[in-house]
Length: 374
Image 1 (cartoon, helix red, strand yellow):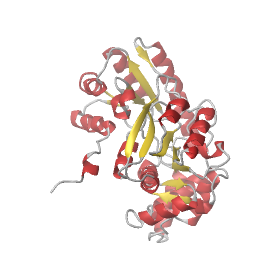
Image 2: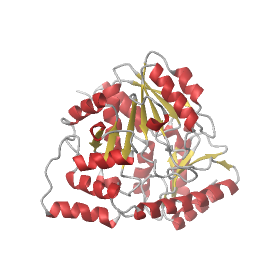
Image 3: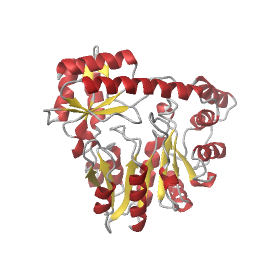
């Protein structure tokens, strides 16, 4: 017997391929491949989880999550959704997976502007749908016409990730609005991946659902992971119209049941408590962004759009066609680990993603090694 075709059609993330290679090689490597904040979870957040454990609040919650947390999430989404429109999930990944299961029928197409995070392809295939890449040319702005022209009767949903992983671009609001309205006209959903919404550097982020008058077909995904350095706590959310959220809640009865209870209490503290720790992290990322952008601008043979959000830079080192081969060589020969661009879609081939979710000293060392190697 063999695994099903839908599972065998799923690829491993190239980010994890490089992660595993780095673990195998070991030694003094500069690790710039994984998008994980290098800060500790704020103390008051951890203390909230400890307090919940000490008072014995360790059982199941409702499938949709603690009411207090759902209300806190709704508050962060600035009036776009009510408490009942929120499903607390085991990280943003589960929210994306549930969204795909609920709105994509077998044979539907999930349109994905690329380069972008690779997991969307897997989530589409697990829903027996077909991921369709729509390449965006350098400097990776969202070109609405390209997406709209590709929409058709088989379009079930469109994913928009802004700020973008891997490019760091923040999509133009006019372009986002045009895509959302066109999706509505095609009776398709827009899945708005906004896990980096609080990490913007040049202007504030506007939620996708807030850009249109009728947002019933917009599903918003968020997470505590990046903003509050809570990647391992696994708390995210899916926000949308009740018909979708109710179905997603029903499905998770048979998957994760609920997000970890202690982590939910931690998330309440993160969202409703002091925001100074998160603001300090955001300021540190901004300083690193400025340094990375300046270094790349001065690096011969390398082009990269200035990251406007998230904590990634997407590099085009001229003259390299096989980004996986290049990334592996950089690990073995230069001691610096970056993610190969091919993992973010065909539009990323020949490119490299650099994560500046690391200390300034390590980023500087990594860029020194990269520059010498190239």
